[in-house]
Amino acid sequence: MPTITSEYNPPFLFKNAHFSTIYSGVVRKVSGVDQERERITLSDGDFLDLDWSYAQTPSRKVLILLHGLEGSAQRPYITGSAKVANANGYDACAINFRGCSGVANTLYRSYHSGATEDLDAVIEHILSLNTYDSLYLKGFSLGGNLSLKYVGENRELPKEVKAVVAVSVPCDLYSSLKQLLLPKNFLYAKRFKEHLVAKMRIKQQLFPSKISDSDIANIITLKDFDDIYTSKAHGFKDAMDYYKKCSCLQFLPHITLPSLIINARNDSFLGPECYPYKEAEENSSVLLEIPSSGGHVGFYGNKNITYTEKRALKFFEEV
Image 1 (tube, one colour):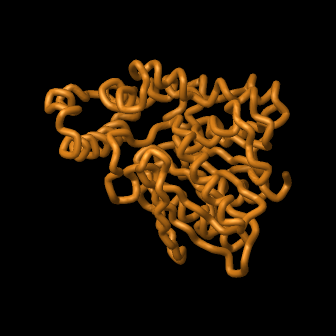
Image 2: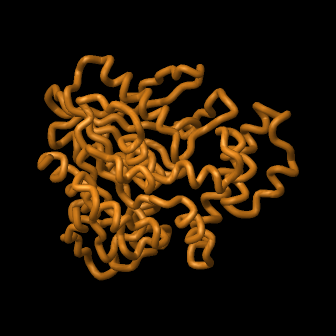
């Protein structure tokens, strides 16, 4: 389907990419979301923590939320999405990826942009509850890439999975990495790297034979982290092999489920290859919306409800 026109037109300050990104990630607060944690055991013996919140009346619909790099189910873009969903009759299941719930996961491996086996396990678990007949996915950044890869892979999707909304998606991981390594994104990249290295030090304590002090010292950029840890811990040859195999761009032609991608034109994290014009043009199931502003997971909205929170529910109701 051709790229669709966006109705997002924020106040002047939020037309600035960095202001929008920082406000959303650092300043915005969301209250009034009561989350209940559930821990599920995975087939490899590791675990995932799911944070549930519920509609006021029993619901047959659930929104599965997937956070971004070094995020969690407590980030405002997740709790904000859950709050709006709950107010509109959806339960919400916010996934904390491995090692992102405040507790280190048990295995050497962690999470990454293409770990769809974990999303599959969550969906199987939810379906086993026999509570829901409609499941919707909403992913942000890394979680958006993972969501689109999941529905575009060669698997038979459960009939209960109805639609996907993916926000600020690095559809081509290497293209996004190159943007993050530019001077304009120095502070963002530095923050991501600090968080990842801190977790790597925890892994070193748990698995001292697999991570040396020199490994950690050699992590200068985010690509170094993916070369030294992400790729080796998850079965890829190196960072480039990881980016190639896990970018959702190659899976978009195979998507048959209604899927909406919302990538701001001024998102400083996304390179040209992260805007899948051709794939959307050639696949009627993939809708591409490119607001002129919004930054990375920004999309300010009145009454502390973001544009993408309203837009996602509208999309789900239409499909």
